[in-house]
Structure formats: C-alpha cells, structure tokens
Image 1 (tube, each protein chain N blue to C red):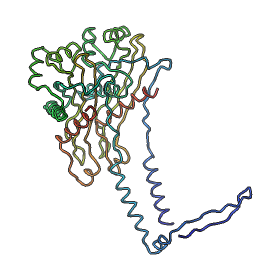
Image 2: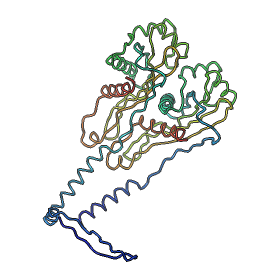
Image 3: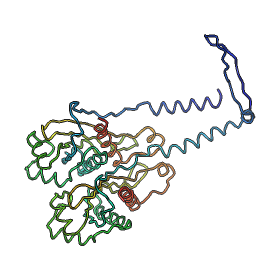
Image 4: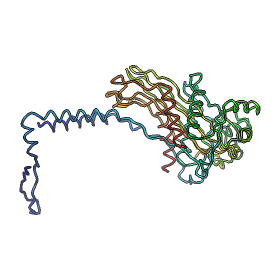
Amino acid sequence: MSLMRRFLMVIMVFVMMAVAGCRSPQPTYHIRSDIDFSFYKRVAVMPLKNLSNDQSAGEIVRDVVMSELLASGLADVVVAGEVDGAIEKLGILSPTALSREQIKRMGDIMNVQALIIGSVDQYGTARTGQVSSPEVTITLLMADTDTGDIIWSITTTRGGASFMSSHFGTRSETMSETVLTVVREAIQTLAEY
Amino acid sequence: MQILTEVAYNRHNFKIIKIIRVLNEDMMEKAGTGKKTYSAVWLSILLLCIFPFMGCKGGIKSYTRPSVQIETIRKVAVLPVENYTTEKFAHDKIRGIVIMELLSRGVDVIEPGEVMNTLRELRINRIDSLPLSDIQRLGEALNADALVTGSVGTYEIKRGMTVTYPEVSVHLMLLDSATGDIVWSVWHTTGGPDFWTRHFGAENATLEETSKKVVKEAIDTLF
C-alpha cells in the first residue's frame, strides 16, 4: 500500500471516529404556524425560574436572552426594570407561572406584544471520567399578550466534552460560551421561522 | 513531467483517454529515494496547525438601535454593575474598566462618585432593575445623554483537572436617558483553556487582562 493511501486511510478513520457518536442535539421546539411573528415588535423577558444549583443562573441566562433577542433584530426588548416594576405593580408572586389574565395585564402595562417566560433547568459542570465540561439546559416560552396563548416554546441543551476536546485537547467551551450557544440556538429557531 | 494515458472505449463506443498519472520527474525521483517521510512530516504539521483552531467560537453579536446616532451621545454615566459572580469586587473592577475604555474613546464620563451621590439623593436602591421613571430622573439629574448599565456573569479562574484558565463574561447596555430605551446591548465572554495552554503549558492571560479584553471587545461594537 502506498504511503499516500495509508495517509488517506488514517484520515478517513480519524474523520469517522470524530463523527461517530454525534448526538445531534437538536432543540425541541414548537411554533404556532398560524402566527405572523413580524407582528411582535416589542417583547419583555420575564425573570427565569432557576432550577439549577447556581444561584445566579436565572439572571445570567435572562441577560443573555435579552441581549441575543436584541442582537438578532427580531424585536425590541423592554428594560428589566420596567418588567420588575410591572410584576410588583400586579403583585405577581411567581413570574414564571402566569395566568392568561396576568399575561394580558403585563402586556398592557408594558405595552408589549409578547412575554418571554422560561426556566434554567441545568447550569453546571458535568464530570465524565477525567473530563469535566459545562452543561446547560434552558426552556423558553413566548406568550401572546393579546390572547395569553403560548406561540413558541423550546427546550434546548448543550454539554459534554467534544470528541476533539477530550481526545486531542483542542479548545474546549467555557460555561459562558455554552450559555451563549444554547440561547443563540433557541432564538435562531424564531429567526429562521 | 510524464503523462501516462490509457485508451479505452465506453459503452457508446466513444474513445476515451484516461489519464492515469501525471508525474513530475522530481517526485518520481523522490519516491524512489525514501523521501516519502516528508509527506508524513507535512501532514503532522498541518494537523498541529489545525488543532489549535478547532473549537474556536463565533464572533460577538451586539445590538444598536437603528434610529439612534451613537455619535450624538457625548456624555454618559456608568451606573454600578450588577455582580452575579462569587468574586466580591468583580462588578467594581468591570465598572472601572468600562469607564477607562469609554474615556479612552473620547466619551465624556461622569465621575463615579457623583453618580453614587445622585443615586443616594434620588433614593434609587435597585440598580439592576431601573424603571423608566428612574432612568429619566437620573439622566436629568446627571445631565447625561445615556446611562451605561450591565452585569458581570462570570469572573473567575476556573480550575479543571489539568489546567486553570480565566473566564469573564459581561452584559453591557446603553440606555437612552430621555426615553429609557435600550440603545445598545452586548453580551460577551472571553477566556477558556486553549490548545497551547493545555498541552504546552503556555502562559494564560490573567483575570485582569481577560477582563480588559472582554470589555474592550464589547465596547468596540459601539464606538
């Protein structure tokens, strides 16, 4: 076997190993097909429910969601203070579990067409053998403030060391990068729609 | 150069000439003298060059309100930054870097002490969630075109199994003091263990250097 063929074989095996075991972590999402999303010009991001062990995970992910929504150009986002003020005004105790009526009233007070509600389900480091890697799972929902209906929902997750990172020591993701990727993937589903 | 061909006929009886090999005479010579190992060396170098870049992240994404001309904002007040980290003074350090960066770009920044005094005078306690009325009152009292606000999400030296590395993430926003609208927003992070640090023990950036880098790159998207 010529040297070049041996090289090709090595490269082929290398590529196959890298691809083998790919999980394709596609986010699970739902979009109401009868909705025109160009109508939602102004949205409010509610405080996210923190189901992780990290005390600040909810606030961190909320900031990223606000920033990425703005950066995507999909909608204008209301400042967090306005949202917190409206929650206080309506005496809402659990901003992550709103009734239809509360959604409508929040929309009226802040003059927004939709609310983003959600939770941080996982925010931490997973250890597999000698390798530790960040792991983030978020759930986001968009509720129409006119009707109170859920028009978009998504659960997306990211984590685990990649093949290249664990075997060849290529650059691995930090926690912040994982959060950013997860949120970007989620908002991308809206942008693509 | 030598071209080796083979004449054949396809099923429609067309004559086709297959070029079997195009060989450079030098290559042929080398092939016979055991210099094939050069290919292996080149391949190794190529892989070594590719590995450090694998896993590189995408660029920074920011938002700037289309209807606002950023050049018209000349005087800003940098509000205290919210701290979501376990590092006690991370927010103060980031705030200081933001002020320095803005000043270095010719933006007039109101003295931080004056900002704190005004916050006390106006009895504004919750900086992380300023309602529209407070934004307007602050802007008026400080005579500022815009307010810079934000948070520090991560500010620490992360310790892995075999490597330590700095990680800093910030969220910065510019609020129009007249309307309370978000004029500019960016969430940015930097740090992480790179190939050279993990394998060759190359010196990593310090936490301070990483903080300066993340703030500079974030503000680069504005001015």
